[in-house]
Length: 441
Ligand code: ASP
Image (cartoon, rainbow, N blue to C red; front, side, top):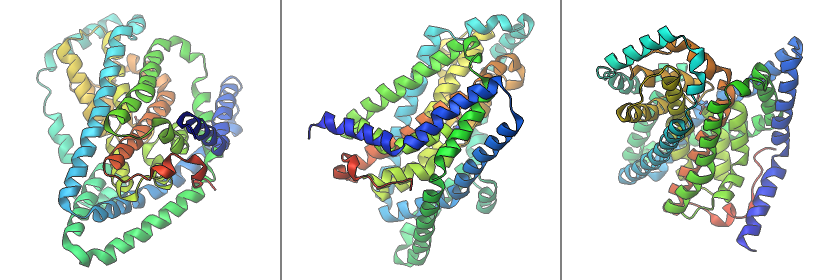
């Protein structure tokens, strides 16, 4: 069969397979718009409840899944040289994709100037204070990075697990797994234990996914009802920059990346992870989507060895969509408050956005919180910029849904590229969507 025919079939099957989640998403938007104009408490409370049930169910399996996936992934790679090689390649690939995201975000924001239109909402005196503040502190703010790095090392792994701090959990799981790989055969009981944990959490994920359509419907309806469509008009330029940036990342950067670094056909990959993309959009949480991202990759041809290593780390550390949003948002704020955007400041914003996004948890809203780190680098805090932030918050949820879709897609893109490089992809399966196993029963 011709390749383009296979791709068309893949996309068709992707939609057919997931029509109920897609329908949930579309109905969610329509019901949300209706509820914005006809507020209805009981309906709103019911939908909020249904959405929360869905999110909590998937969050429930994340920690056992991440730990067991890392243990199995690393012990199956075994030799520490190979782990080092894979880890280095993963960081390099994630880094390239995130660097592209912040560069595109900065380029678009500087040419389209979304913040200039918002400046007349900002009090001129406050703007003057902000400008002076940025100028005086930009040179002295340097210490933050060291504190962030300290926070990555868990003092007590069990308390990190109890409070759900993903980065310290991952640091511990990585060190522990590398040690397990080093001690040889004696690790068998422990590894078998985690193999069982992993299999059981994947089974639970299957069950939860049968609830994906109502879950995505409810979450989308609640999100859309809180802002309606009219808000888009007042902040359309900012949203426009983001939509263009996200689209470039999804339709230009990832395909080029896959072309340069692998022979993975991008549309086949998108067809294979379609469920994960939609659930990422609906839940606005990469961590909550992780079980599904792993299931999509593994059931459609990417080896367990690579996906169980690369995806959990990606869901926590690789946030290219978030990094792009943070870059655009901070440039927007700088423009709105009349802060001079020198080349040095722009580079600083972009680099801090890379750090801030990777410290950000894969949960809804985290990106707009860790943006404080980028602002700290300029000597500012979100409190000083409330008027500007109010703008960003009006459309926070929808931008969160979009950036999470990117965060999750790029995890799968990097995972597929590494699997290709390591000969760990079953192309007969990936390129044959008719053979795909069902994820949602
Ligand atoms: N919601 C995003 C995620 O889970 C993080 C963010 O707020 O940008 O990937």
